[in-house]
View 1 (tube, rainbow, N blue to C red):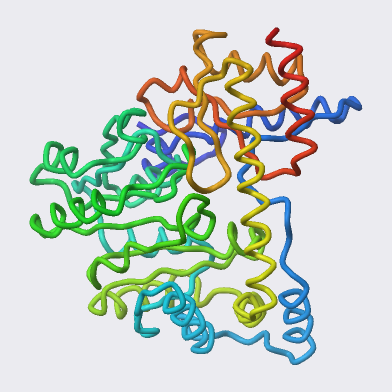
View 2 (view 1 turned 45 degrees about the vertical axis):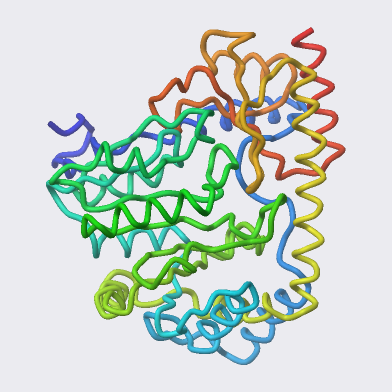
Length: 391
């Protein structure tokens, strides 16, 4: 039954399967405080405080001046697909550029992949907690997301044993993220190989969200693509490359899937932004990579300061995040519900953090997510404010 609206016609039933993004409510509350003149420190939204490096900005201007604004192929411009393949090769993974599809952000990649893979009656297995839009992408195509609780004892990540136990005749595949939002944890490579084997044995698909793969701190970047050419891997220019609003991403698909994805892209949005594609070529210049690596070190320094500081506040961090820019902290010492705790921190300390409600159903009231995608002095000020409130 569709939710009631003031429209003279009914909305599609799929709307009822997709929940609101609850984090935006606390962000709106923070904005209201700011409108009253309060200094709110945002540790909520997952958006780098850095922007595109100078070479990328210059490449965008050059593309505009050269009139590179026409439609591109639905799969993306060849030089960018080749540059991404070379980027993988620099990290020891060989990928045929013909398997690389440029998309309108990682979200566009998710939509294309799931449009090609699932439909009504299908099920897709995901970890709980997980980024909420991932399960909503599944719902948007009439399939059912099945969330498997994954606690801190398994780094909040699926295991091969989970896949084997939860697979049913309706299961079409598995979606995972490494590193993950909201936890910042990665799947151990050995465990990922076991998951891949379990999925392959059952004739399903394995889709790996790697949009934070460039932002890892305790090991070098790695990709699930090293396991074979039958996986779907999604990445983005938003996080490591600091280009969130440019709406540009990519995915690597099995050779036999390229034609289906191309057809869907042609019909659904024609092509990704031409200007963003031409500018993104400069992301892979040595001077740009050097800047990105400096920023990766800056994120690591923030993590290494923040996690012990949270422990000092008695906000337990059950698993050390090894990537992304999130800490998933246990606030149960202070409140029975993380949403109430987050609003207390916002109203009393003027620090905006995110309750666990958006990320699943496995004990979300226990956890809050803090983003360290903001400058270290602001993070330090946020912790000082929280210390006063929490005693």
